[in-house]
Length: 443
Ligand code: S3P
Image 1 (spheres, rainbow, N blue to C red):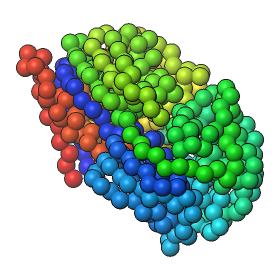
Image 2 (image 1 turned 60 degrees about the vertical axis):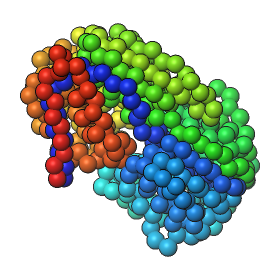
Image 3 (image 1 turned 180 degrees about the horizontal axis):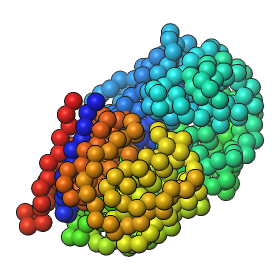
Image 4 (image 1 turned 90 degrees about the vertical axis):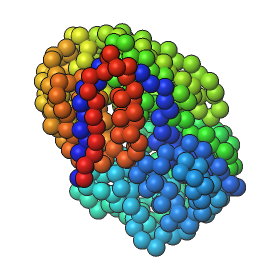
């Protein structure tokens, strides 16, 4: 089990790129694998989660060549996958399990998806219900619709599904199954969730139609291979954005990062908190991307709730850190989905923030963080959750003394170079502003 150790840093001066977007990297493999022709992917995120998706499609007979660490060549199967020889390991990745279940639901063979202890505890009934309505036979082997999932592929029929939750994983699972179904498949969400699947469908010429919150796809659609350039992950950039926004005299530029409007809620929240941020879109192919600049300053509390939540769902742990560093209270509401992520992120962050000396009131669907307390370094657990580990590392930069994060190896699920970037960024401080920075991982 590795530990991450962090000591204080007064300000951030950096110009960097973050690794590729996790959601888009997963989808680049899936769409490349199902398309006709060869798909070249650049900027692929070589993290544990995305490697699970890659290995699963290789086990389903797809030839994927790793030209170098971030550059793949995928030979599309034209939607003809082969039965796997063994059960398919999704590791820690909910995106792999939920989206691939949609693909496997429409195959002519039986397969099994399983994951690690955290994934084995996550709800799958939300995908089992609509996929069953489409004609699939899916047996949950865990309690109450939990993994492993045994998927008996069937001939599917399209459905018009009104989703009870705003979840891109649920929407994408149904749309991927819809590629194999007879007739049209539609999904209507209560609030828009990230739209990478819709953009990928468009990019691969599947011509989805989008009216307000409803996406419709024609059945038995063919996908045409395309080049994909994966932008930097704004969810990874978020850690540095908060660190810079909350420390006076900081100056940070993040380049070539994804600026899809269904993911940039973090910027809106930080702006409301008084952060000095500028974004500029440089390119807009399938996905818009560009640069973000932040100048450090003073943050104030805000309210994050309602329709904004799906857009910032992965950023709430680091936004709770911004809240701890801000003046006044910040309230998070309508975020009950956080309780069923890689860990219960409300309980994990509330408990960890308290260890740093922050006053937190926990609600069923969120929390109230009282900002501005003097912070002391803490010894905290990651609970096996990458975003909890990285959020606490950033808070450690603002605390007096040393912070230790246990079980920090989970960071590799989304940001394998986080520790190296943290070291480089925090040691790149002009000497008059620099306190002491030391960071390391020990086995
Ligand atoms: C993801 C969707 C989100 C997000 C997850 C990745 C995706 O989950 O939390 O990290 O790639 O579709 P939900 O859409 O289920 O909230």
